[in-house]
Length: 533
Image (cartoon, rainbow, N blue to C red; front, side, top):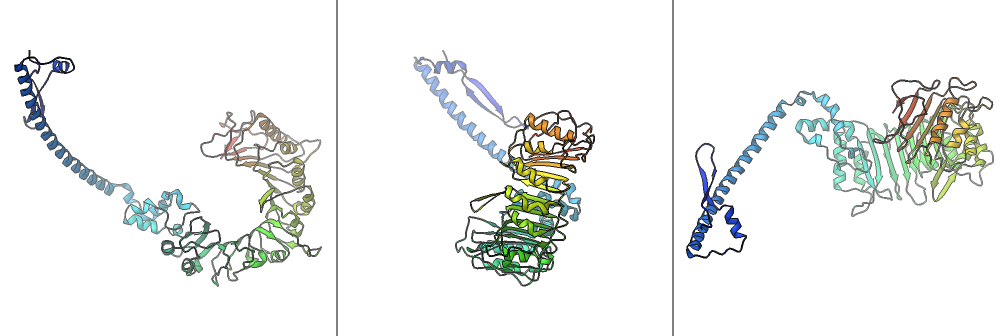
């Protein structure tokens, strides 16, 4: 019996000739013998197996040599393939249609390729990578030619208002200034927990910026404890944001030569400690406390169109009859609960819209508007046609109704930061009744919230009653024209037929806004609207 059968196995190695590799292998019986208790008995059989094993080892060595040769050849082929692919890519690049796009058009396309991080507030100069600028030399020149991109500079600062500067930041700021050409500059700052080894305010950065003071259009500065020096002239400055980080809030700022300054925002910065061309201002935002001397400063702001006041503190020794402040051009006013008692001092015959910050938390205080504040609003709100109220969490309808009843011709009402999709009690008040008419000029109602809200059938029924009661068929009130919902989340799924318009009365728009990917549809139980947004 021959245990090792001589079976020939051949592999052709060349397609152009008969070069093959041939070896002897065993059959299936050999595998069966190897896995059994069989023992070769005769010396002849053992010698045959030993001779076959020697031949197999020689064949194995020869096979490994052939494999090594083929692998070397395969490696050379792969290298050649990479060269071919690179060559093809270069040829395709030469034939690409984008090469025929004029550079001025390419310059318009370039900003759309910016990474999202480019516009994040906490990204200092030089911290972003723009792949577009790394394609080729000509594309890089195009990227560097988009001046407005390099004119936005954000400076990191610590909690003391000190600019965290190092050589890398200084170099990045210098590069941005150079690339921005003569484009108007926007310089802002953001707080960061990171600090450099020195931990001080690097004056080199601001020295570099002040050399371009004539181009500054927007400037945001946190005034540190030791103060801050501004250049004598800021001829193009349009917007200025100041934050006082001194321990006693006593920092002073004087910018007398800023003829184009129109918007000023003061965060914990006293009005009376600030000197700017007040008569030029169109927007003034004061988040800190306003006291007696600050009222005198407001008298100089004769051109204001927008005013935000969050806190007002009447000093104990202040005169009882403080002279009112006249704002002939004021159109929009934002009032915090701690500033309501300053409203009798504001005379604004052109006032069109007032936004009430119903709850304001600061310095561990939770300020709210209550019934005692309503008399301070009577004269101010008479000419107003639009109101925004919020946040409305835990607010009783009596106070809300008292506020919205003060305007003589309220046309628009917007409610923000609700704990429910709508303020149900207030919507009930807005439903029109011919026997007891109220808010007869109302044409637009809106709701906004940043919470994850769930609509219930009661909410839908109330909205439908509101729409139907203020339709063109109702007598004694102006038909409702717009109903707006803006929510970051929403969960009420109901089919809404949008194939045609059939509003109730004049209402043609049901505006719905939600986060991307969130299905949010409101059906007014059969009423069909054109969905906008």
